[in-house]
Image 1 (cartoon, chains in turn green, yellow):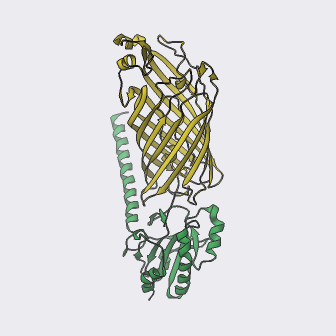
Image 2 (tube, helix red, strand yellow; image 1 turned 90 degrees about the horizontal axis):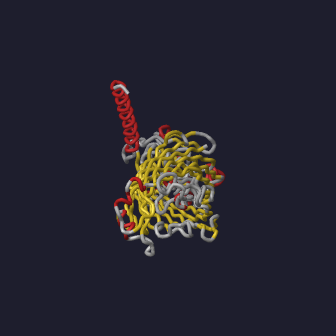
Length: 176
Length: 347
């Protein structure tokens, strides 16, 4: 290869590498915005009936993103509690979005459980949610205030299961 | 709190690389305690995704160092301190260069089951100074003493079924399979150059072993943090039937047990650095055609590598294996390093 051609290839490779690095940096930066007090990353739930609910459209309401699966025992334990709490406080502007990490072959069971809940449910379809990172353990919950800022980061919780005490401590004050 | 095991295919890489939870760690055993010990399962990622998947892996293993026990050996030791205490000399092997191309076809009818067929093509060159008598004389390793052989052809295929229905996360799997005698074996290939031209190549260096082997195994993996997965798998392989079973002309490959464990760095969905530790213990080959004194041992490799998501459903990986420990019976050729590259594609 002629030296000019080689230099052109090297320049192209360098530019490609820089572009790639830029993309990764942006991706990482996006992940890093998941901080309490910062604007919560946008998340969209595609519900089992096909409608889409995006968190930016819920500004002015308190939003809980809850991640669960049919085979996750702690999740199954907290879902009825969360469902009752969501129904009780819906009039005060509380919205709960249920993201199921089940695979499509478990859809029937997801539907069965979703029918018992007061909040909408949908399948995530991946183990990553942009802005929220890899969903490596469940249950995990994220609470977003009326101003769209993250109030509680589920990844920071060692015991992230909802209890009446925890709902009263974290969410109820936001509904006042 | 429940750790998520990777259960999806279509999303990001961590969501799921290849679905074959039952891939076979080693393409073929054709030489003593060397061979590819890399865990292709872990390289590509375990999954419970359904459907068909094809794969290909190329392994390069150059056994260019003579070793015995835990140390490097010399031709003088091979002859003057033979592994067989009744012998008055020994075979001084020089080099075995192995290239394996293994094609795979896997099918998962559901989240709990996976069936995986792996068919290797073996290309192997071997050189040896042959059996030399005591006392050792440097003339015994003169170039004119060198004989060579080349093996190329279909190796022994493996068919493995995996069941991962024990846990709802499908992260614990049990394996049962067979290695089939599809490769040419016994005395199929002779030396084609040097003083040993026309003599049969060692049975352990042929493309196949002539045996049907039972394979049992298990694996487990889980996310241990937002950025790391850990995995461990183990397999045991034992010949249950041999085609070469005539008295005086028999061969049975030694049983082998392998285990791999390691970490996958899952922070980026498009590329996953990984570090594996691969352990292998192999018992001595048996039979009149076997080199019973020079085919057993225990080895450990450290294997760094990288898996990339090249396109939707297409993953490529590359690993280097560096031996960090070897305790070999007798004298065996051993690699300074080996390398594997592969790809898998969901149909």
